[in-house]
Length: 245
Image 1 (cartoon, rainbow, N blue to C red):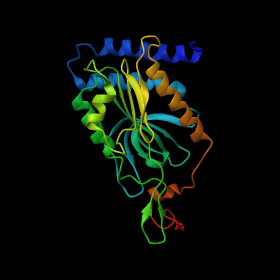
Image 2: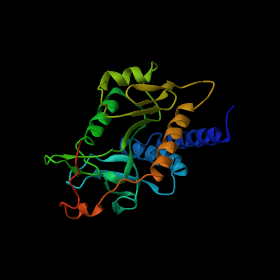
Image 3: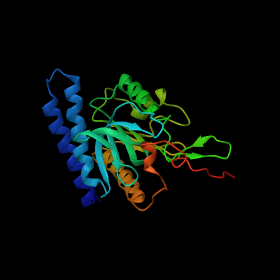
Image 4: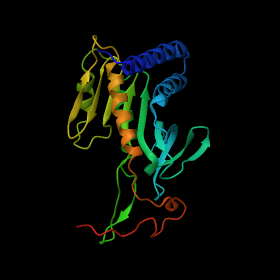
């Protein structure tokens, strides 16, 4: 049985896709088309944000001045460290406050997959919640979940099969793949998920939002110790020694 939540989520993404398709038609500018769909996805995600989280766009940074490539959507909170907002939602986001980094594609192609994975690779050097071991080396905590989202695809075959031709690592650059009309998959020691279903239209997006809401709800009830002043002055206060057994 379809629940009220399911029908609400499916109706939002269906309406957003139809509106974005209409607005993006014949623009002759890929950048504008992309921005239209970024806004469309943002409007579908925002109703499911818990009270501490917001949607932005920009680069993710750490206390060592390392930064990612620009991400289409960054899901962040301000409990750990405040972002530097340049204009509206555009800014630099401390990695500790970021929970999701999303690349949005109008139509997924092999080139777009490779481009997205390259951008997600820029998240790897970031160090969140830095701590120093007894031997002087530094280790960090969790990083934002990298999500590749597409409104359409240029193939008729299984999307996950093509994706895994380019992303077969045991530590993948992107750990969530959601393509409307194709399916939803996530990595947790291995790839799990499902293809799109004619019996349950847009279940792939509903599955994504289910995991999204569960993650944000869990985040609201936990908080790692952190000194955000390290973004102003990286010193021993930002890197307290921790004994590692």
